[in-house]
Amino acid sequence: MVVAGKICAPPPAWRNVSNRVNVGATAPGQCLVEAPINQYNIVERYHLAYKEYQNHINMLKSHAWKCSLMGQSSEMELEMTYMRIRMTQPDLVYELSPNYGFSTIFILWALHDNHRGRLYSFDTHERYHNAANCIGNIVGGGRFNFILGDVLQTFDQTVALTGLPNMLFLDSAHSREMAIWYTDHVFPMFSGRHTYVSVHEVHNPTFWNDQDLFANKERDLQIWPAWMATEEGLTISDWLLFQPYACGIHSMAMSRWPAIYEAMNDMRAQIFGADLRNPHAGLRPHIQENPTLFFELNCPELCPGVS
Ligand SMILES: C[S@@+](CC[C@H](N)C(=O)[O-])C[C@H]1O[C@@H](n2cnc3c(N)ncnc32)[C@H](O)[C@@H]1O
Image 1 (cartoon, protein in one colour):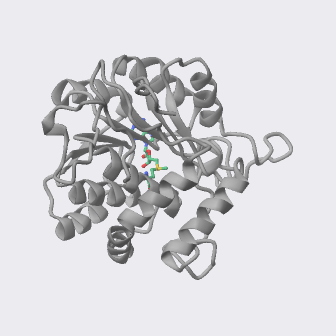
Image 2: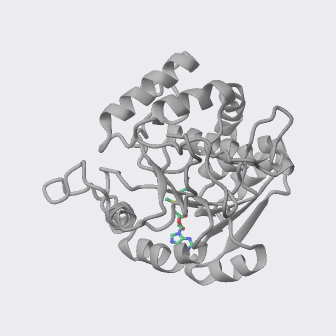
């Protein structure tokens, strides 16, 4: 049974027909009956999830190539994002930011497969159109909302409109300043609320910050070795050290966690019969870094007896 967070004695509305408990956001006072995904159980837990969602992912991927293949995200971390949305059933996801909409495709498809949830995507330009329209035509529109402008200016007013999201997908500017904004300004808004977060480009050896990326400049590996997190990555990793209520921290980033990267790919290849490390497999085999860091904010206690 695959769920990211199950709760003790949930109210009936939180149970589905197969008696599985899906948690969009665990309510105060409730405890987890399954440990969150972490670096020790990551392969085992995504193995279960892949087995459950394999056919859905195949369907999504068979359409994704028509909608947008433009973007920096790696394929497997977006499959993990898809599965995480299926496992946690969020009502509201914020995506910072969509750019050409490659990540948007995986998020919208997962919400569609959940039969619930809305997506708000924030960007300073409107390159998302093709992907969002294309995917909307396939899985049905109505879940997608786009907020144009600098997210530092638009975030608060959007929260005032929608309430706080259950999931934050962070892949916007990859600078220390951006990480300081969301750790110092955004995360405190979620105080006490169980919330799922992902941050892209935490361990990406190909650049150090956005300036390098935009200048198409390779990272200077003499100064910042490949295993070292990016400027944004160091800021969020450092912030996490000081959080008593963060949990479920996991990543399969190739440059930092090579053994987990290989194990995840071996596991996935067994299930799908196709290996994403193969230069002829997958949607975009040249992008393999998988630099996303996944975690949860304000995690409830584990129920007694759960380890
Ligand atoms: C790396 S791209 C997103 C890639 C996308 N998630 C994907 O998987 O293909 C980063 C995006 O963040 C946007 N961005 C950067 N700073 C921003 C800001 N302050 N407000 C809104 N969007 C911003 C950029 O315009 C760009 O489209």
